[in-house]
Length: 489
Image 1 (cartoon, helix red, strand yellow):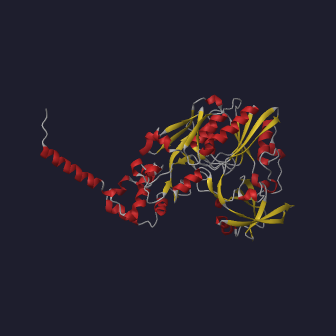
Image 2 (tube, rainbow, N blue to C red):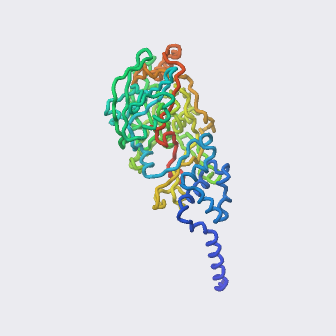
Image 3 (cartoon, rainbow, N blue to C red):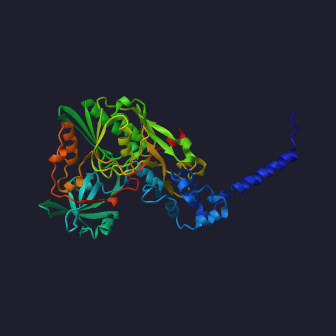
């Protein structure tokens, strides 16, 4: 039996204690830079391009005093965060800082303050006059209650008639809680005033499963049509119900309208793919790759037979069998520059298995995704429940790149449409969703009929110029995010 030398043991414990205190100096963070410390350490651990950002090098915090001085140079945590992004606006167009993660998490589930519509701005003539046409109106929203509908035309905000000279300043009026919109009609290129409508933004929960229908006889086939506007996990059951409807109708072709869908939950994207293509079984739908520090988190989303149902708080409340179509051997996707991230993931993931034909305009180009990082060092910044209770700041940095089963991920410039239809060239004849003559939908249906749509399309307004109305978009509009549960598997 070995004897224990208590003097030696005590001396060793003292040495270990001193080393530990020295090593954990950083725990005693000056209060004024506590949040900045969270920002740097969270980004140092998780950021997709960490190795390419000099100020995120591991050696940056070797000297505590120098590290604290560095953090103290930034007046706000957001300023520090933005300084750590790789080529913001080009390489990294997507990461953002979160002021209030409770509000943000609600928004991820579709709850936000909104007028309840989406617009596209178009410069329509040589005088540089600009109009908005209404792309979408949410049911039971302020816009819907005011009688605003898809295809309506607006040429003034709070009495200011829009043109290219005043557009960038006037559009900021959408940041106000209340706004007056001037509606016009168009005749031979001339705009005629119709009426003003004043609406006020409210907190709104939008169901992304916006519209579904079946065309009974398109070249002898039943064609399903779905307008799906965001991959929100709290509406997984509504999405599954739409495919139950398509199952019951026995559709043979599917037109998936993702023109307004900027993305959302990667898991929900995998569920949607599973509903569309039954022959995939439980094969790989997508592969996620993280930075070198988290290569152990690399993993897969597979096609699924069941889906989880979540409430608006993001809590799992149920599980359902996925309603999988059995007759779909190809997919039509309607696209625009607003089609991004998890929507592009549908195109990229399914094209490894079946033909995917895109119709409309080039997609946004986002093959990377994010997680929410909280000030919770004990969980490597991933657990909201253990977050520092003294503030609500968080981060949504890019932390992974996504690939399909055959390792394809090269769409940073978007997917170019197989059949290009520039919707805003037809700004004065935008029809409701589901109308067979609606310009982009008609191109898909004509292709199923074996007709060439482009020869039949004529617009009185060529060479128009379009603008996204970012003031009406949430920061996360084009986000692709995963649940913490993926990291724990």
